[in-house]
Image 1 (cartoon, rainbow, N blue to C red):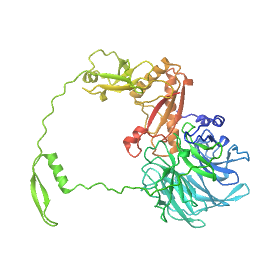
Image 2: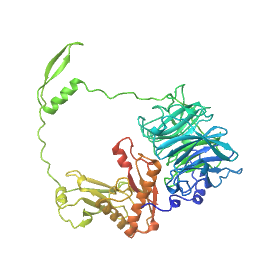
Image 3: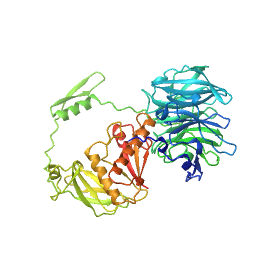
Image 4: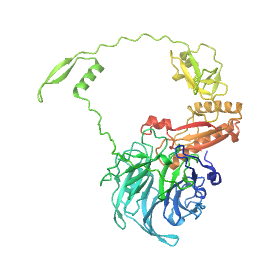
Length: 551
């Protein structure tokens, strides 16, 4: 169920004032931009000088399109003492659609990307005092080939615009492209930056520094990625497709997702992070400006151009012979123009395997953390009811009785449901249990939702949540956070909203079953915390999940 109050979606600005953590390697304290952040997504910071930072704020009730507006431009100013002031809405730069400040084309001209309905466009605004006056729409070809939302920046000097988004023909889910300025209001077609930059996943939030020829961008495509981190690559030649191997910027990496850096000075930056905001983005900086540890060594990338090996005529003939078990011929080349055909021996059928003798199910229930064997109790579930089953635990008999799920319980551990269809006839069934202690987390494996909605679906879902409710009522001191996740397909903002609403639906169900509301907290992470590759449907299915974390 969608929460009607958008101001409780994440920690309030006052709570964020108290937030800080240290990078283990550098012990550098980070902080949020206090008044600049809100309970909603605050993203894409752009420093325009004069102590002024522009950024995009999504789904805020003061946006021109109201609480459903995917993004208006807001502004925060930095005082002489280093404090960030309360953000103010820039209605003069915004619309009822999605608005993104790309940065300064020159000292008096601001570029703004806008999406109204399904139409993308880029506009120039001219500075007059503290106000911005609309100038004109620029000519930007093939912009409407993008699907979903777009991030990007204009490079210093105003000669290039770098945009990141999803479009047909890309190398991954979201790729980074560049366009060059031809005339005061004319730009070239977008060029993909190529496989050294764009991987199988998401590349977003590009910032290019023409002084160093270095590109800063956010990616989850590199090996071992956990969320998205900021990577840095160096342009190696004249071509926009020639880049070094991207290096991770360790100094600002966290367990969340980082993106969209902007330089205030040589030693001061602001960026977007989901580290401390329940999956919703905040603007972050260092509490005290520190020397930026930017990689200085860049090497050429190693990009595999290996193509799938073509199946030869001979291989196909042998394969067909195996499948049909009929005499076949194969072509043996004697020269470039002459072949001789020889028979291929038929494949002898494998003898029929011995009949499997069914054995009762053998259980081994252990603590998933320390691998110690646990005492346990089994419950047998048919539909949504518990069955008093006393026979031999044969899989075939369970199926005849209509039993679809076996619940495994152990004192102090989250209950676990095992589908009968996943039980084997002969192998020992090993069940890893998760202890309900601070820091532990568990996946709700049998909880399903109607496609594209937060509505719970199916008897298995209800039975699983009923079991969880029983456990939480029996353990009233346990406080859990319900984390909703999606894959990375579609609009990131909508994915976060959907994941939060799904976590809310689970909470509402548990409360309806007598679990204390105060013991249940929710977060929506969208697609920012994948546990599998989003390049395949199987991986995306794993990423669409709900997890419990004990607090």
